[in-house]
Length: 109
Image 1: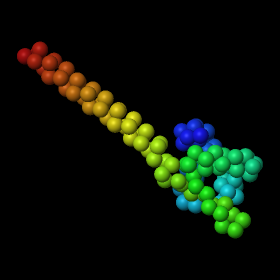
Image 2 (image 1 turned 135 degrees about the vertical axis):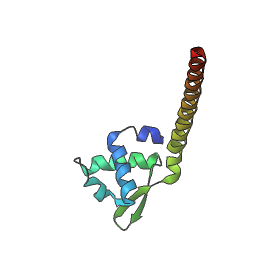
Image 3 (image 1 turned 90 degrees about the vertical axis):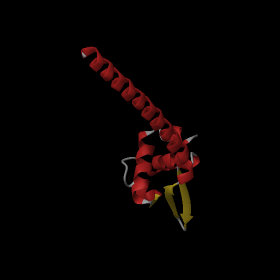
């Protein structure tokens, strides 16, 4: 599963927000923030880990989750591409509107 598929679920997006805000969280801490069973949260964490959105390290009996920066680069690259596309479109629209304004001003003369 890729990052986009993993982030298509509301709960998984909220887990990522939670981890992003807090840095590192144990699976127990993450589970306590949701009104669903710990096994259900574990499934979501597994998907996010497989998609390389989160990374997990073990310390004794704890599983600690944090953002996996390289895994999020796919999403970041896509967002940057979309932003650049819209910036280009808006720049073209601005040029067109300025041209129309100049043409209208010439007509009035």
